[in-house]
Image 1 (cartoon, rainbow, N blue to C red):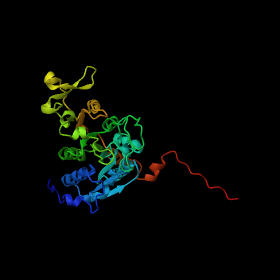
Image 2 (image 1 turned 120 degrees about the vertical axis):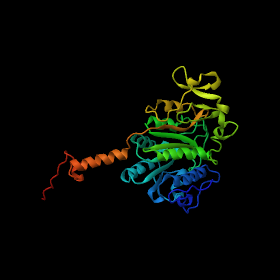
Image 3 (image 1 turned 135 degrees about the vertical axis):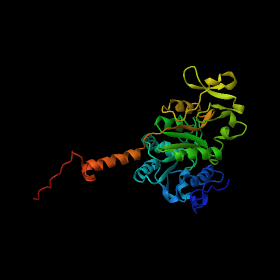
Image 4 (image 1 turned 135 degrees about the horizontal axis):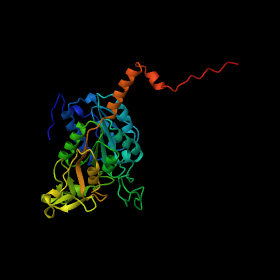
Length: 344
């Protein structure tokens, strides 16, 4: 794939001079390449772009982008990026995080940035393990996962990041896979174009501590059987020659059907732009920890006011009503002065 040229930049303009230091074969390399190839298409400059990360293997990402960046605190990247996006609406703000960083210590920050709809893009690398700290189970590891911290198998039921994001009222939610460059790029492009918080879960292989975690969805012998591609406005069919499909079950849930055995009108048509997230959430529940029947693509993409836009409007209104006296606005009507203590 050749570098894409767009207003004044190529891939080389977005790649830093730092040595990329991930384990050989790590899926992070594929994601980094896809992002560096995409950025010239977006019409922004490196000096107008910021990558903020937390702690983890994925969080080395800012070092390898020739942009502004911050390798921040464990789980707090969404909070830091929120402040930046709100105070500098002229910047393109990205968050790079992992399943441990975002969903464990950072879980509270993640759900609040999603519900607030701050204008930034979140890339959540999910390898279902703690890689940087050498192979402990993570919030997305399957039940029974044997790791250094769970030698008899994990007892925790894992998070489904897409379901979590939809439950937090995220305005854009998608899932893709590190090894599918074309799909990864198309999803990233859609996320970058979204106004508001866009979350992209990326299934990413850790070939050292959890190698093969997503082989079911990558192996040419099995992937078509279990991957469900989502395209807005299209009936949801998958499998060899579209032999399987998504239908509404007897209890109103989404279920898997055989295409030849159902009426064409009974096949669910994907609507990524629906205001109600119910269908998107139901799609996210098709896949379980075993990864069978895994939808990939954009689950939801809706427009609603961004937090930073609402905040700017509120501050502008406050400046008009308070004669631009920010100190008076902060004090409000319930302030008082404590008299100095009389000297003896």
